Image (cartoon, rainbow, N blue to C red; front, side, top):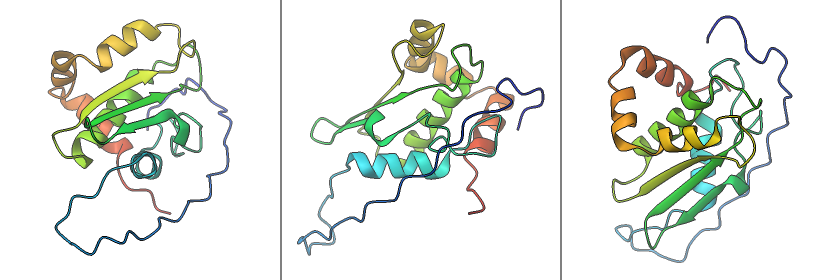
Length: 159
């Protein structure tokens, strides 16, 4: 993680108890299964750590189940995250981590939209523009230092 913490004492929340998926009656193993809000939340909450702390984004309430929207019919996913501080300089990295995790986890037909929760960050508009601009994202992913930071946040936890 980074040195010189920006938020030295974040509030840690307990993880939500996972809902159990109900078995579908579909016995066709080749049938496409719809992707839902819970599946996206599980992908994000279990596998992404905060850039500054060893806690998951779920434990810091940066991402909640309600902050995930999925429309499987139109292949659209929107994730709205809430940085722990209004001036969080790691918000861009967090948003990039969310985007990369979804890009690696979802079929390429999905459009991914990453947003900062309204009123949760001082530079909300600039962040939203940056996180959803294909050229800016591509340029960020060509930077070896940023890729290393993102990959570190996406390492599986020891739980």
